[in-house]
Length: 500
Image (tube, one colour):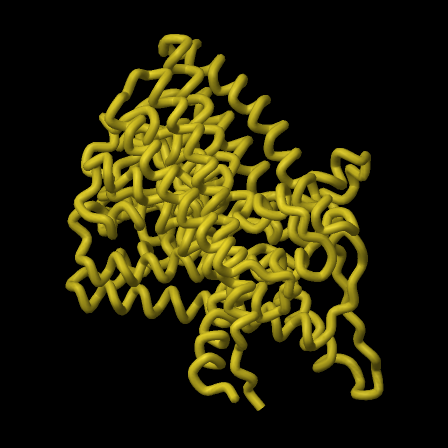
């Protein structure tokens, strides 16, 4: 029997929503300080008003919905889904007040793309928005890459089962260390260490390439926040093409690949277990898929002479393939060049890499290398069963930090999420076709949205029809949560309507 949520259940949802909104309001202090530093007085007022509004709303919800009831599984899924919507809704306020977006929907689209690390932008004049807005865009992307729930657990004293239910609701079910709070804080610590190192490296490179020290620091900071979080935001409309720097592209590739690795792999490497990178099924799948995709992309580009010479082909092909496979979404060409210049072989390889994405428990999106590896192992297991006698016992294992036996439950879970992604890719593409776009560009854009990649072939922009904006928003939101929490939110709503 379906049980209808009671008042205490609604209070749990409202209380923790208030907590996350309070956190978003506090975070607005950073772009506010940036506005003060750059003397951007209108932006300072926007963030002051928005920050106070978010704090007031969050504190009011916490007061009205105060409860000591423990978080259940359905609460965890519902909260994980609502956290992203509520945080994006409030984070969009200063964007809307700044006047650089055509509507509040466009501002919400920008905030959701930042938090979900999708990287599409609907800014009307990105090259001239305020430093405060750039700080806010990239800060949201950096924090969203680690996960809103991870950020919340890092600062909340929410221990035990309730914390893990929230953590799992964000499509994360892996603990780096046994305690879930310690896991969240360790993820944040790893990211902050990389932030310091990456910002320093990118600042030096940009200074070497001719920018002033101030420009180098701020843009280096923002590019690292975006690159490590596999997001794709930059301070310029031309993305990485603006810089014309092979040094910058090389270092960003390195940080993008750090971003797509499972945080458990980072931890294993830092604790001295170097062999894990060679044995882990995710690392093996990523290595093999990247090499194969690079070969196909560069072979197609070189055969059709898209770029002059092997050097230019490798530079463009490897960087764009890396940006696609990591779901970072940086680009060194104009959006229209994908279908105007790239051959079908290179495009299909890029789209497949975008669909696979990175690792579980990383900053990357996509179906995830772990699921691809599990499905491949399941295929091998079935082939062995066909070839061996019926009496033979076939047990397939895979290594992911430790050895696991492949069972039907694991395979079903991987297959279900993979099928959901494929269905969303197709439905998003059909929606684009209904709005008059060709099927292949519409499929490219749909894959990019659902995997939170942010590479565009020119469809997504400020003039995008409202209906498609809403469809892509749903893809971005659902893809970031790997659909699990979205289904939980729908179940919670259905229980409210039909439960007893």
